[in-house]
Image (cartoon, rainbow, N blue to C red; front, side, top):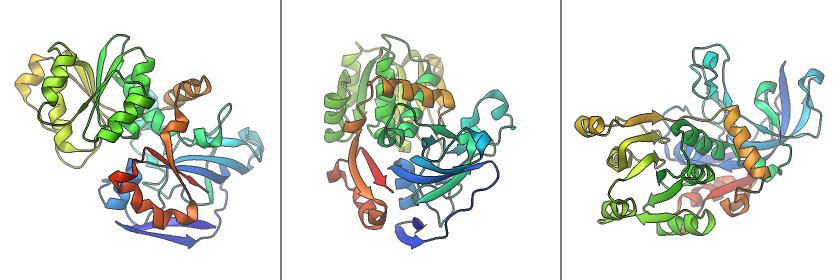
Length: 336
């Protein structure tokens, strides 16, 4: 089978590998679509903190069942999606239902080889039928679920003022689900093209471009009170540190981004506001179900989000172009 391997930062190659053997309790899948996300870009550029090379990337996937045990509930030909966070089920986090931050987590495409390949065998408990959605849509569930999880973590309420810093796919997902909860949503980003997309396709209430007057603009939008909930989805430590200043008194700051290094903030300002600081990692079954419900109801602009496509064999040559700002990439799907 054809697989695309990231051998080292900046080095991708297409290779023929043996088909996987289905293990006990696993489902053998024919990969259909793989979404490319920020994690994959960070792996390619060498800035993903949890990874060892070489690695087959890809954790946003839809597939078709090839073979499964009878008691699994799956049959050959079933369209499915995969929750790529392979949790242990027994650690302190899993016992609380927080499988997204399992102590022993193995994420497809990060801790173990992922979906940029033609066939994959994964434990059945992480495979779910993609009922009522297309295989294209199913491949976009994961990044949307991360945004839905962050919004749930922050417990966004109707009429609250929300700021999302970073208009990449994860930030867009947070915008979508904050709006679905009835919040007023503002986006802050460095790229005018991304801000225009958020206005035209996501119908956010306002956008602000990073620049000398951005603080004044954000203050004006909120009558000087700033935001009940701020989300950082930039993957930039300076932006993460700066975001504390945008939180209203009594508000919440949720870090979706993860970067190497130390997050720092002014303790007097943090205490003055009685800020709640939250980390948001991955997603749970509940979040995937939230996305599925919204997707089936036609409340997700998934066709607009899917801006680029390529075939698996094209990935080594086409992948680097996704990093070019002029490409205006939101979500690229790989057809396997």
